[in-house]
Structures are given as structure tokens and as C-alpha cells.
Amino acid sequence: MKIRAYSAADEAKLFELMRDEGEGWSCYFADEQIGKYKLALENSRTYVAYEGDTLCGFMRCRDDDGFGVYIYDLLVKKEFRGRSIGRILMETVCADCPEDTVYVMSDVDEYYEKQGCRRVGSIFEVKTQRQV
Image (tube, rainbow, N blue to C red; front, side):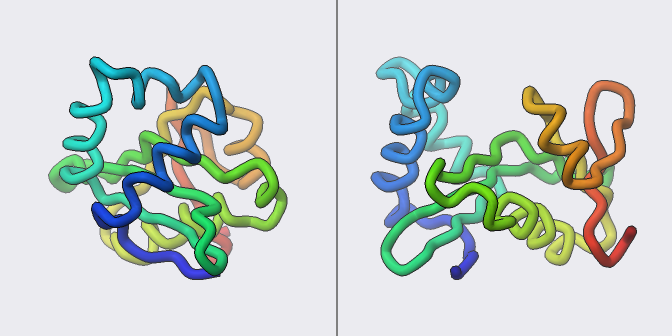
């Protein structure tokens, strides 16, 4: 598996991944929103995970000018779940931003608790294996 920064060449596969995931992601690819989300992708720190030619996951986050990095979107293709791809994506942003605390905006709290993230109010602070 290879993780790298998102580029416009990943766009079609990324939107296909979200469409395959279903209703919870439709707010990003609905006709009236897709342009906004494309702009958000360009203005965010976005990572993609590939196994061969298959986009198996992605993560989008933003730097809050020294107040932390916030993960807004994290999605792993269903058939690739259970392979630590989400955790590796989170560890990648932690490694790329060592001076910043990384937080995640969650609607899947159980997943982040399982990953060892610490709840901080209504968000989670990401802890890497190296920090535990």
C-alpha cells in the first residue's frame, strides 16, 4: 500500500469511493455541492491510500494556523477495512505535522476510541503508536 498527497488525477476515483460508500457521503458529491468539495480538497491537506491502481482510502484535514490539524474526512473502502489503513492515514498526518496536535471531527466515535484517540470535548485527539 502506498500513501501520498492527493492530486487532481485522483478525483474520479475519490468520488467513486464516496459514491460506493453511500448516503452518508452524498453531501459531497451532490450536484450542488461537488464544486465546493473539489475546492475543499484543493485547499486541504488530503492523503490517498492506494493498493496497486485501487484507491482504498483517503483522509482530508486542515491546519488551523497553529491551533491544531483537524481531520474532517476519513474513509476506507469496505473491502480494505481491517487492514489499519485509517490508522496509517492518521499517523501520516501526525508525522507530517509533528509540532501540531491532530484532532478528528467524528461521527463514528467507536472507531476513534478503538484507535486510541482521546476524547477532548466533542472531538478526539489522535495519538499515534509512538505517542502511546
